[in-house]
Image (cartoon, rainbow, N blue to C red; front, side, top):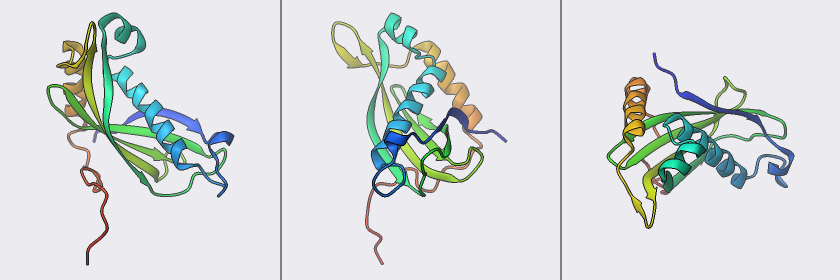
Length: 159
């Protein structure tokens, strides 16, 4: 069976811990944002390629799920899987696990847009190289179960 991509191994830093003694909500967002940067590298949009080609990603939407506490020094692993993509957009699911092979302490679903920055900044179809990497990733992740929270917004449960 296919596995999610390991994007980043790290530890909860002291300046991420809040007055409740666990990782602050904004720190989760920061970690997922930086893990998204690592995912960009996996789809052929590293810093050098972005500079040379003018292609990059813009984040259109983020949904964060806080599942458990992460305390100072706790080991974290961020894994990701491609849920879907089209001509210009990609939807990525990431989980933050602690310990590395443990349960998710947080998860995020992020929608990205392919953008070309030239004389004007505009959405643009994927670069051929990026599209090929996304197609391969989609095949690799097709057998992974879709997380039950994926595709859901924020709402109060109705009885």
